[in-house]
Image (cartoon, rainbow, N blue to C red):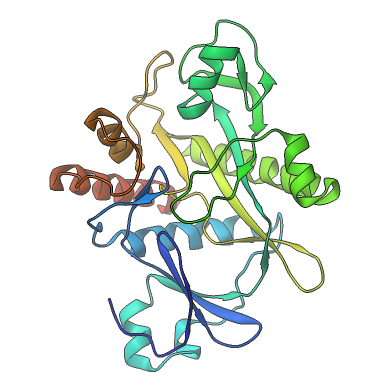
Length: 288
């Protein structure tokens, strides 16, 4: 990884943050891969660049819905040229925001932890659903199903809307819910025209110094979303995905207890995951 001359603010599961000034920071997407809230031992080389470009595409496409963290500056405005050139495809200059302390999850289809809960209780995050739904069925309406925002090494936990209101306040929780659903519906409609289903996704929000809710971090990437191909989708199954579900499935079958350290994922699984990321990027961003 290239040395960056700015002071480091924070290293997350997959991103590193650097201070530019009191209002702006540099977000650099690494090649680290996180699954079940644990960083895997080996990186996927090239992943950070692909995911940054997918996020940038969506930030631009969804900018009419709400403000995002972009400042309008490029890495060349804040770094020496050699440093900027080395990370230009994996880094963005972003506003420094106060993070909203819930994960904003939207589900359009019944999969993952939602499917497990539904089989046991007929609900997803406490929301009652019709009987006799199958795995991967499209839900009657997209659901906003928030979760806690876990510290490093801990797991996010699904919560109901009342708990989200208790954490961030009712007014802000309602804003987050309404914007999340609007963003998801617009993105899902766009992706469907490209032959891609967005099963579910997670948005991150912050609040600026004026209290304005702002979209931040990453948007609709294979790290934060579950993508399926329309061509291979079949309700009643776990459809093949464009995202790190490929790695999750291998980990689920490995017998790992989902506590650090994670097992080393075979190289062919990592290679296929990167190929899926590239395919998702190509499908979503191809010119009309």
